[in-house]
Length: 90
Image (cartoon, rainbow, N blue to C red; front, side, top):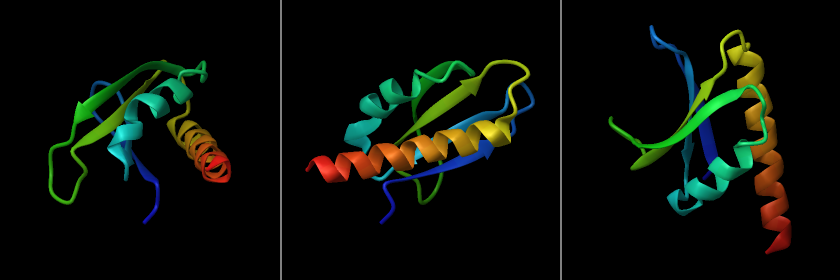
């Protein structure tokens, strides 16, 4: 099982990136890890609604004018690095 998956959500008010972790106990740590991106306006941990979803997700709101596709790629890359480092440390 993958440690996370991310999706772009195109909402009429503000596009977001949702991150679903396979281990929800890491939500706060991952939220803190993502705070270094200057393109991120806000990060929230929210209850997931829908089928085949984990109980919570991390919702990332980007600053206006940020390219959401590039940002998703940057976040994914950063999270893969995070999880690789975390597995090496164990």
